[in-house]
Image (cartoon, rainbow, N blue to C red; front, side, top):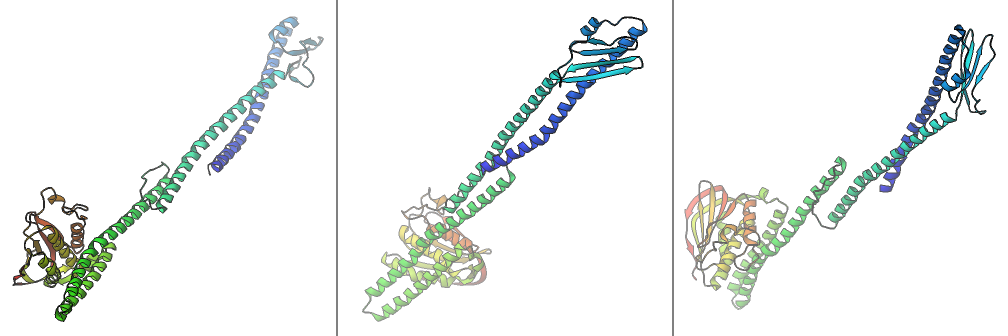
Length: 422
């Protein structure tokens, strides 16, 4: 492409030089010839005036004086009644330039060798050609700079496009000072940001899925272990089998929630949900694990609360908080539900040592963990609550107390305290 640009720009420059240079050369030749002819005609007129003056004063025309005043000229003077006066050497044949001036008393004819005029014309033509060559050189330099300025950005944009195609979605943010190329670069940068966002979402979804699916799978494994351990007791097997089915349904709901979150559609799916049903389902699900750890689950607060959200999202958030308490907390885990003028509040608190002071302000940040985990659970839990239009906060670090704030859907107040033995 660069070669084509150079060739085309050089061709344009050559055509422009020819269109301007050839007429200029013709004009220069004509001007020099006309100037030489005017000069020779003026000399003839001056000489004729001098001759007539001499004749009127009865003076003799001095040939030596004429040769001195008009060197390198071939002069012929004719006055009536006098012989023809010739001064100088006649120019070579074919190179003679002659002008004359006449009066009623005679005439004066002056000639000169045109070789000097031709030398002057040649010098001017050489200067014109030199200027044309300089113009062509400048055109070549300008074409080279322009082609480089155009081709290098295009090559760089090609590399950026290839890099985007290979999955490297880093925006270059480089501009070239050419509006059209800058527009292409801006479009590629926007595409890079979109691709980067898509790739980031893909990675987050894979990470979130691996983390969030692990919790219900763990609960399902515990149910299956209970079934295997009580193989000779049909009632327990039936009870645990039903709980396992519920766990599988929740696992399906978790997958749906993750897919919806990946598509950024969860906020539109928020609807009135029964808080008691979700909380009690989580207590039923996690009670065996807490019992094996010799810990109890306590349900307290207002009953009959209804909030805007998604069952799967709230279940996943409560499951994450309960799993974190099981791993890192101690003592009884209390789930307290209440209603304020602004929100439905679900508090989850245990009796453990709580969260260290250095981790408290950043406990919801990605990859921050106080117990050797992945550091994803609380981050995803907060994202799920936010997607339902609520928020998840750490209200007290010691003992660790988390609060889920959801928007009101309906408010029926009744109280019931449920405790589970260790």
